[in-house]
Length: 230
Image (cartoon, rainbow, N blue to C red):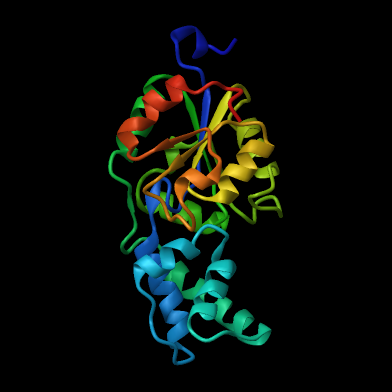
């Protein structure tokens, strides 16, 4: 039995996705997509249009953006992907902020002795830079990006590595995409989906063990969630 279990809290580790889960990165990602699209004369997309494109990594997001504005060929995708990454790296945290209540929830989990981790399909160096600019890096025992292990979500391997780097034990994962749910479930973790995230489908369709509409619901939801409720 984990130490936390004896105090009525079922998890010793909680992992988080970054974009659309812990942080609202949509403004900065939209600016990066529009910078790339504008370089070939495409019309800009709104933040609301880009949100459902986020979650599979920058290249997939750009593919969706190009599809939505007239299509693309492989050479254009490769060239604009580099352009997008260069722009984004220089403008990582202009508009990015934690979702309301996220910091308070992290504080409460830490006060309960829970070890926290990040697993995002974003490049690890970008994730670390953003967390650093927001003063959040030291809260996490593990920060794994989509390039850290050579595989990204929906593979369970990065989630398994997060649990290992956090010291092992009962773990849950919090995310907002089908990639999050598939990866966590394949790793044997129960997963909570955020209805306020960057959804590409109804949150109820993700197949998560639970859904939260705000961070105020996270601790009570984790308390109710069984470690085996994958």
